[in-house]
Image (cartoon, rainbow, N blue to C red):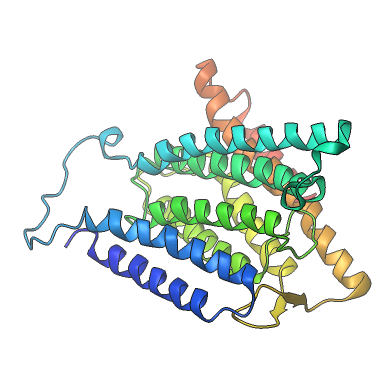
Length: 311
């Protein structure tokens, strides 16, 4: 039955979010639980409209590679990239205006100290993250001549990442933060992002493993290094113990200098692999494509990759 397992999983998630809202230990966690319930409930309703309760088997598609690619998440990702880019830039304009005109800081939820991290995270993780995920899905299919691995798992990556963005962004405005630059979201948002990122890695690796093209194009090396390294950084920097599983507050397992070192080990390498390695992978595919010329020296591109990794 098409979409039935996905509908049941999303529906169960909505039910658990409802329970979390009912038994939450603080108002901030309750707001996020209700928000999560609303998003998952809408998702359940939309999926129910797509469920095919017929037992008739689907006829497998026979066609060329281009017609068989899974480009739905790519198209939605491109739209999300534009949307979050505009939103992030708009918040930046408001934050800059507050510096020039301090009287604009009239609302505690929208003052400069909350809008500034919202702006940076929206531009880096919402705008940049959606661009990287969408292009990674696009490039790995074309360079592997294979459909995305995992069926609807790619859709979970896309929608799961949008949920992460909404929870993180509203958390900034509500004052839910670990006070870590570029890693402000609290423990439960970090866990959700971990699930989404593991699914992203599975889709990407699975597509490479089932490729029809014998060679792994260099752009995929850069994308894979970005995915794996960001996962390691995220897990290492967000090791925290929650005060309650129904509350927002948590405390890092590190303290003092060790905590600061861990944070900026994450911060600098996030710039190195999120804002550098991933976008280099994008450039190694789209620049030659648009120029209608091959990479000037493919051997040099391999040297480039390993030089970045070892540095």
